[in-house]
Length: 479
Image (cartoon, helix red, strand yellow):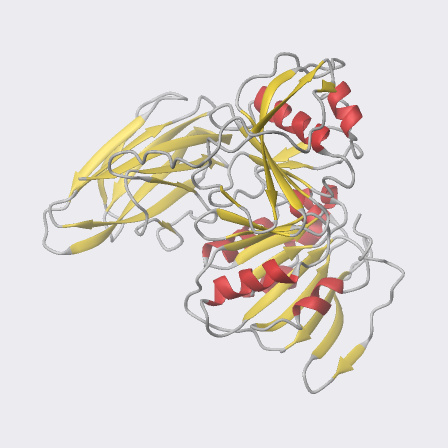
């Protein structure tokens, strides 16, 4: 619960000044549940622009806005010109502390607070119109169990559309939790470190997956109020559970714990930079030695990176140096968890593989050529990861080929589903395909551009049978 979202504090009905217009209106009122409340501050007209320069993200350790990282996000999305519209999504309360701060920042056209009080409110038409018209969505502090109830509603796709058009998202406290790949939803109550380490399958250890997956931020699980509430132990248990339960790709999970008053700004390339006291990245890269219901956790050698203000962590190219090690044996941690001597330093840069390369995680909605994820500017070979959220899911990625270039795609498909691979022309015609039968059967295809000049081609990964949150991984090369 974020203390700044005080339900006792009353909203002003209407306030008009020369600088700001604030409008309060209930929307979607029914007898079945409390109304959605919409409070708009600033301009009453949304900005209209063809393209934006994000995505950008803010991950805050407590519920309030951190102006340093919010300014960075606004600037990154604007690309140095114009202004943006912001939406704050809350699950409770009657105040507007986030928008009160945001409307005072340079480059903001408007800020709208939407307070949703039921899961079905995620399908409210005005809510989704406001979100889709925004360039940044901020999830307020509160109760992340309310937030994960919007999984599968129109709100989920609306927020994803903001990122896909080059906007951004963020959140604090509960809003920080909901922005990770794996969400500690706290629907069974809030776990302490002692509870989590003593029994990582306690009833308070509940998770939601398959809601949001942001580029470069796959296989993460967020935690907040980190040092103040001594949550390192429970984040270790979260990571161990994620690995043990197979919720990640490649058998690894990264916990991201942010302290109160701190915020990570993550740019479009996946580089996270901290403003404020501290943040920690906790890597579990193997199966736990002991993790079972009613059993204390035993896990050796968590790799931990500690960030202080101004320091960075690259989520796109995750480091293999600069960490210290901590272990848990029979539910007891080895010494102080919040500091340690790095076993490696990063003074010698890692060798870049021949030909370079990069990675990209799909951003929904990308279910058609018109909404395809654009990966034309990436370096190759490119590794694309994504999942089949439903049995009708299709993921499209746009690439560019010059005359004489060959596009080759090799996809590793998890055993959770059967997916097929198509390579399409700029008009959508199928140039070649790979449709091997069977869940977990890999696919590969290639095509060569023989015409002059360059053109856009599309890589399509399509569900044939089954679905799930397990990742496929496609290696894309151009030669």
